[in-house]
Image 1 (tube, rainbow, N blue to C red):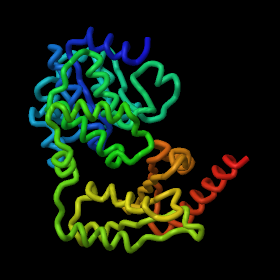
Image 2 (image 1 turned 120 degrees about the horizontal axis):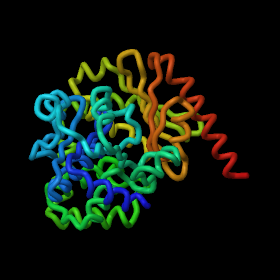
Image 3 (image 1 turned 90 degrees about the horizontal axis):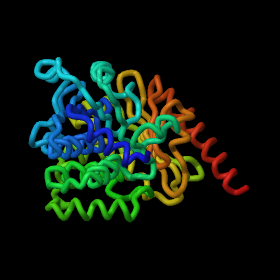
Amino acid sequence: MNYVERFQFLTKKADNIVISTHIFPDADGIGSEIALCLAMRTQGKNAICVHEEPLLDRYKYLDPFDVIISLEDYKSFYNDADIDLFVVADTNSLERIGEGVKKLAQKATETLFIDHHPCSMSVMDDNCIDTSKAATGELVGELIQSLGVELTKDMALPLYTAVLIDTSSFRYPTVTGNTHRLVGSLMDTGVRPPHAYNMIYGTKKLTFMKLLGKVLASAQTTKDEKIAWLTLTEELLEKFKVDTEDTHAFINHLLILDNIKVAVMFKETAGQVKVSMRSVGNVDVGVMARALGGGGHDHSAATIINGTLDSVIKPTIDKIHELLESIEKNKSN
């Protein structure tokens, strides 16, 4: 049974379906679950999306029917309901969905992950996971179409946004002809790219531009210019009153540099440093992130390291440089 057949089989026999995504969800996870929930409802299913916390205001425009509710609200209205199928979008581990939602998933008769992140073969074989997809939203769109469900604009906008965000506006090497064919079908419902882009990235205050300028001014590179990095401190976020969600794309500005292979952003947060990595060409930053205790894709990955910017930056850049040299040496042999 391939993953499309598995999806069709499990969704067909389920009546009560709960859908979720990872904690601190991004637009790929959110858009995927909203579209899937709406599609399930067209099939007569009792479908709802549950998050550990209420959906952030910045994403509510993607959910005009309020299909995403908090765990607290779920317990108030549906706590005694049976769950035939629990679907997790954009991650392949229950450990990443929050403790409360994890307990909810464990009550379900069946659990299904729909994802495009790397995982073990055993997890891949039992779920709907395709690492060749540019975004989970791309995979969900194709799964919805496999049911013969006609995509509506209410499904298409969250799916388009999912793909837009997870490909950094279609610039990652995972984008394929199939990605654009799905995007074409989403646009056919009436989704307009300028509107979708402006809604997710939003118009910005002058303070955002000033923060971006400060962060870009922190840019540094290794001597060979193959690795470049930015730093973002808690002090700067507080000073300019910018939502940390709006800073995720700062790292992409490094990708235009000459000779760049790996872009890194160090973000200070509560005694830890989030290290985000992006790559150009065929450099696998997923391998680098795993070596540093994190994970992700070959072109986009991250980890979190305990410490301060002063204690984390130099050893991390040294380690990334060492890994990059090893990768390049192996490719030349």
